[in-house]
Length: 427
Ligand SMILES: Nc1ncnc2c1ncn2[C@@H]1O[C@H](COP(=O)(O)OP(=O)(O)O)[C@@H](O)[C@H]1O
Ligand SMILES: [Mg+2]
Image 1: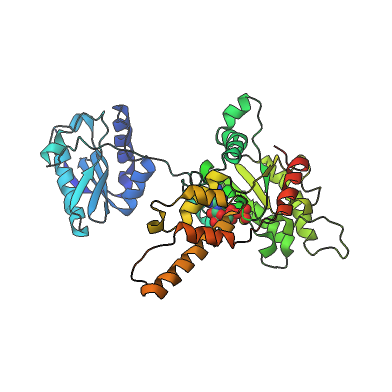
Image 2: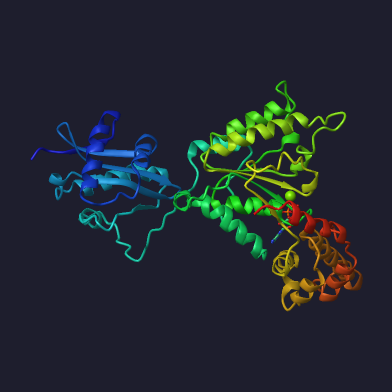
């Protein structure tokens, strides 16, 4: 057989590398690293080939990650196996990575790959007790840049779960939004058209923003908040800026687009003199039909004053659902209390009493009462003995603070909200 030798991979070797890749795939082994990853590593990291004459008969590609090196591709042509080529390539790649400071070289090998003798001979230990897990990150690389420009981001996966209580609201959103949007094919089989735009309404501080972000996190779609009233005033005007923002959002495969306090721009038209926001309102009304045409995106508008909205804004065909988000129920209040009570005060604290005493409180009211109790306890500790004994606020401190807190949502506003649910909500 022809003599072989090892050298660095050169650009014209790519054909040979691809042949090895195809052959490797034909053995039935699914490579751990995708081809584009391997090719990226051939350009940016370390790659060597074994050649016999003009023919590429083996290749090894690796990258260094801090003090660990990873082999991302390792193959020897079938008919050249058992000639010590694999072992020689591993030794050569290690030599090239060593100056980068790696302390360990690792290779992930699919179960189907039978030819692993070279690895043992080259001194690699078979770590059979390890298992490999992977997950696809739900955003394309080129979307990230656009997302950054739009001020959007991908939210952590735990947001939805961390919304305490509110089972009814969560169930509605889960069924009406998440289900059809995350599985459009299933929805289609049942003739369900996935929603494209919704309105969340409710008194201030009830969790509308929290839910909007929760939905994005649940869908694993990027979250983009648009601030129509804050768009830079430019020659194009606010309306032009808004249009341009929506055009750019089209570049994203998926997105939850959020407009908070939409009443600021969508107030009833026809005031005299006309509101400077009129043009923006009209523009938004024009933008929604186009936005609705493309799948994979959801517009969420939130408002504290649903009755102030222009009736044309809420018309059928624009928004699929108009969903009330009410004051936190007992479970939600418990979750919010748990968030704000300091750790050393939480042990043994009667949370049931706090939950019962804060019926009608918004999350912000609970936060206010919790902070106040902490402050009182701190002042007392310092006055008594210089703060030496770090006893946190007690149940009495919390109950006293609750007694002194005026709720944001008055009985009147709560009653209006119930009326709005009757007359405006659409589920
Ligand atoms: N169900 C909930 N569980 C835990 N925290 C909540 C819940 N609802 C609201 N909060 C908290 O209450 C605060 C106000 O909620 P937010 O979503 O901003 O209200 P809104 O947008 O309706 O004015 C936020 O700090 C949020 O984290
Ligand atoms: Mg909000």
